Length: 331
Ligand SMILES: [Zn+2]
Ligand SMILES: [Zn+2]
Picture 1: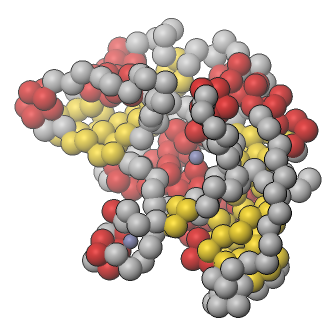
Picture 2: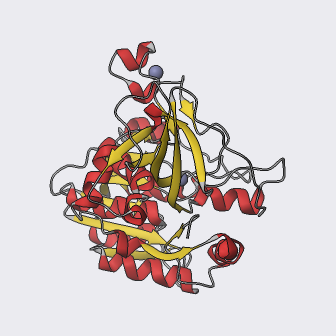
Picture 3: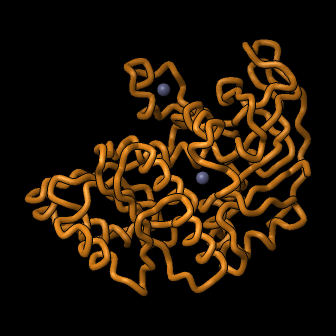
């Protein structure tokens, strides 16, 4: 991890300068820290900030405003955006190579969402919560339905909580064996968030555990863990069920074998969930404000530049009870 200094000048006419108050560490950041071997990669995209300077053509923003900075923003003018499908926009605005784990950024005015009544640390959960929220909305959980969430990282945990809020009667979540501090913390939190069943993969069979309560399988599976866990999804999904998936792997383990016959004969629906462009951010901030998801449950660690290396290392090796760690770049 390197610290770099760069000068940010006056904002362009359609940009604002923001001071970053909080930036969450995402699994993607950890993947980069652990596996990235090419040129430098800016870290951090889950951030809340304060507007400090406004370009002359920027509408509706002033210094002092609290904002979420979106990491990639729909253009609003392409055919998909104009036809009501902004989730398919491929013409996005991004963070222009700047790290969210930095003190200041220059961003285009349409990339920010104003908020109030929420502290910066809580508000920086907006981005990851929006991913979980979008997966739960796409999964279209039936009232009283049964859901298995694969993976108990922050995204999986929040998806489980939202699945309950969305009307599921039964939610199970899987995680790695609780053999280190990180996994113990995640397992404990899953129970606190109201999961009806927790399954430790490797120690327990996901299929056996689920089928003991649901012999025909569950209505929905949300996959936040890496692609290999899709095998469990196919084993526990019921006839006509939906699998919504967003777990990735960048170290080469991104390919699995599926039986198309099985998918056809069992009428299994597969829905990918990809958080580009940013979607549902204002709703996500609202849910944090209303306490549907409590940031205090998720955010276990806050740190500054000096401790960044230690925190990232601990997230990788599991030696600290970290669920979500948040950097405070300005202290
Ligand atoms: Zn992320
Ligand atoms: Zn567009």
